[in-house]
Image (cartoon, rainbow, N blue to C red):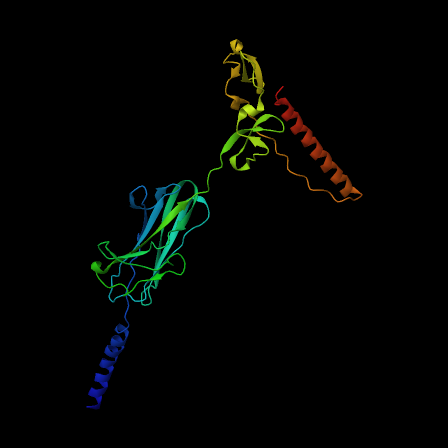
Length: 296
């Protein structure tokens, strides 16, 4: 009897240990190609990467599937969102759960732009969807950062799959346009950035840089010299002249300002003098170039 009791105890021990191990609930987070993006503005379906341009809205979407054996609890979804201007962006999503084995999985989805731009998260755009892509609820903002927690976790089976999606907007810096203006001080037509226009220094009316011609004469741009001249209308030659005064516009030569040197002696003082001469020479060069275009 004693021997029989010992054998029963030995045989029962593995069963007890197994039952203790199997009592620990655990689920899985399916990996692979679980993260994609679509161009909402252009109505381009989910892919990776997707093409977009300035002003477009894109939508990222991640699939959360649990093969089991137990339901996932404490499911959290977080994503990165590049903010630097670039022509190519990659967002990484991380799906984790408190009882998952392994604890988390990641995937990436990309956006390719035709010009440098940034991606900006659209507030209030994070949604939780069911297995049929029907909206279950709107999740709080935070997926880009600490992440969002899925209420009720994720159950087992394909019908318990969940999707989380959110939107981002492509933002680009406004293009700086160049315009031709009359520089009032020199009576030259010059090209400047539109944001540099100053009404006290410039005029958008290019005729302010020319003297009104007498009857029978016209002001034209002399193509060879890039000067605006007055000729008889009968002498106009399209191979030599242009009625478009913009053809004589010049771009100002911008000379960087040389820092004022502190008075000193020795080699440092000599170097400062040389810097001063270089600045003077640059100024003379600008003056000569400008004079060539001054209206006679």
